[in-house]
Structure formats: structure tokens, C-alpha cells
Length: 256
Ligand code: ADP
Ligand code: UDP
Image (cartoon, rainbow, N blue to C red; front, side):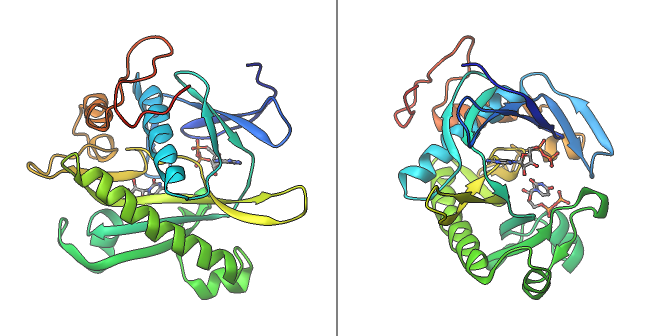
């Protein structure tokens, strides 16, 4: 498939024009960044793993009726998606205290939260993606009340589906980040869909038996072994990450 012009290069991915209007080719890089780009490293193999794991997760969510931007994986590093207007918010769902909420509220890392908590951060690297309130989102018009309802509903359903999916393979879904976009249909209708990626770069995943971290905290906290950890997540999900345009061996793997 011929991809078009390069439209944007971010910290972890590059976006190209897709073959049809309204589509994009997303290329997953091996670049790892943390602390708003202050920490940087190239970790060979990370992009391939995130492409495969994100494909698997989006496909699973779509099987459960969640609307997403995902169309299909193209090759080891690229996927075809619908181009959407990104809502400038990072939606974080938390089941267990870790990272910024532990610091902010003085909670012990690993403490179970009373229930799943949804947080919103304003997507702005220069400001360090600050936590924002629903009233601020409403007042500044970053998302409409209907979009807020859609995002909260989809975020909590995604949490239920993914918590169960990971628990079945001995992994605790501690927290994760979602991005949403507006998909404009030709008839002018707008729909809120899940966009970007869901991978060990954007989730905290802890082994249920050992509490070993199987996510980007391996990089953030200089623990090493990031590729081994992501490979382990892929293996448990039944994704075979080998050479060539492999299709995987797991029972749930999607064709093509
Ligand atoms: P960042 O921009 O934070 O450095 P990435 O390197 O992951 O992050 O870049 C991917 C960019 O693509 C993000 O800004 C994300 O919001 C955007 N994006 C993800 N999915 C879509 C989509 N379907 N349509 C348009 N933009 C998207
Ligand atoms: N996260 C993300 N991108 C961001 C910020 C957070 O993917 O720009 C994910 C992060 O991997 C974790 C969850 O969102 O799974 C909650 O992150 P937290 O707010 O605790 O941030 P951090 O510890 O990275 O400061």
C-alpha cells in the first residue's frame, strides 16, 4: 500500500496520509520518551510490539462494540486508521494507585482504589498535560457535554473489557490512558471514537503473582528489560511477534 505525505511526527509515532481520503497510516517508532520528552532512548523492537499489541486490543474492543479509528494493520510497524479530529484531552482510567495520583494524593503505590476513577488531562506538552476539571473542559469548549458522556462511558467499558482480558492472562490493569477523536460521517453526523494507541506504553500492567512491571515504567524508572516485558505481554495475549508479516497464533487473532 502506498502511503502519502508525512503529516506529523510525534514522540512515538509518525502519521502519513492514507491511501483513501479520511485515512491515515500510523507508523510506530522505537523511540521511548518520558517526563514530557526529557528522557529519551531508542529501544529496538518497541514499535513493532506496540503496533501488534494495540492492533490486538483495538480489535478486541471493536468485537465488543466499542467504536474506534482502527481499520487494519498493514505491516510490522504500520496500521491504517480513520483520520479523526483529536479531542485535546488525555482520558486516564485508574484501578490501582500508581504514578501521578499516588504522588498527588499521598497514596501508597499498589493500593486498590475504591472504584475505577476517570481523570482528564489537557493535551499540551508545553504545559505538561495538566489535570483539568469537567467544568474547565466545558467552559473552554475542549469537549461538549455529549462528548464527555461518550468518553466516560467508553472509558469505563474499555476498563471492564481490558481488566478482564488481562486478568485472564495473569496481568493486573493498574491504569491506562485513552485518546478520543471526532469522526465526521459524510452526512455531517459526528461520532466519538477511540483513537491513538493502547499498548504497554500507555498502560500500567503488573504481573499478578510477582507485581513485576510489564509496561513503560521499566523505561521511566530505569528498570531495563522493556522489550522482554512487552514481548511477555504479547506472548500471553497469544500474539506471535516474529519476522515477516506474521499473523500470530493466538485463538483470538484477527486475519490480515
Ligand atoms: P505525541 O503527539 O504525544 O508525541 P505520538 O508520537 O503518539 O504522540 O503521535 C501520535 C499523534 O497522532 C498524537 O498526537 C495523537 O493524538 C494523534 N492521533 C492518533 N490517532 C489519530 C487519528 N486517528 N487521527 C488523527 N490523529 C491521531
Ligand atoms: N500516560 C500516557 N501518556 C501520558 C501520561 C500518562 O500514556 O502522557 C499513561 C501512563 O502510562 C499510565 C497512566 O496514563 O498508564 C497514568 O499515568 P500517570 O498520570 O500516573 O502519569 P505518570 O506516572 O506517567 O506521570
